[in-house]
Structure formats: structure tokens, C-alpha cells
Amino acid sequence: MNQRVLIEVVLTDIRAKAELAKRDLGSLIKRIRTQRRAATAGEIKRAQTTLTAIEKRLAELSKLTQVIYEDNVSGKLTDERFMKMSQRYDEEQQQLKKDIEELQRQCDRENDRAFCKEQFLKAVRKFMEMKTLTPTILHELVERIDVYQT
Image (cartoon, rainbow, N blue to C red; front, side):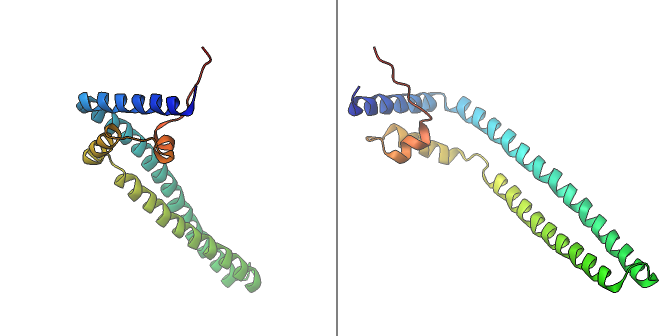
């Protein structure tokens, strides 16, 4: 099979699927929204679980800092050891705070990815009117092409 024929077959298939999507757009949009909500909800839930664990660890670090301070004041812990432990706890707290900020940004990005009907319609129209198959479109839409000898 030559390249030109393969490209035409792929283009025809993409156009047919775009036409099908256009004909039953309501059902397709509903299905996509459901899938996106499920994916977004899963990502947000994972982020919230991680946030809860980080907040718990921050509370533990706060208590540990208080304990080592009291141990230092009472003489159970040397000044040198107190400084090392205090510095390590402070560094961990700073990293955890950065992790919280990153997780919050991830949650915001997931919420921003909510399905937009207008963007979807624009994409369907673009694929229906497509004249040539570019590498970008090929990578965006085609997972694999199976070619069999007849």
C-alpha cells in the first residue's frame, strides 16, 4: 500500500468519525463530560489525600520542634544537636509548603480542564474540513495503524 493511499484512508476515517460526532453531538458531549469529570475528580481526590498527609506531617513537625526546644532548654539535648534537628525540621516544613502550593496549582489546572463545548465543536469542524493529514494531527488523533497484506 503506498503512502498516498494510506493517508487518504486515514483522512476518510477521521472525517467519518467527525461527521458521526457532529450527528450525535449531544450524546458525545455528555459522554466526554462524564469521562472528564471522572478523571478530574480522581486527580483532585488524590491531590486532596496528599494535602491531608502533608498537613498532618506539618503538625507533627511543629510538635517535634516544640519537643526538641523543651529538651534543649531542660538540658536533655545539646545546643548543637538541637540546631541540626531544628534546621532539618525547618527544611522539611519549607519543602512541604512548596508541595502544598504545587498541589493547589495542580487542582486549579484540573478544574480549568473542564470540558468546553465550544472548543470541542471547533475541533470537530476543523477535522471535518481537513484537506491534508499533518504530522501534528496524525499524532493527535491516531494511536496506531494496522496494515495487512491482502
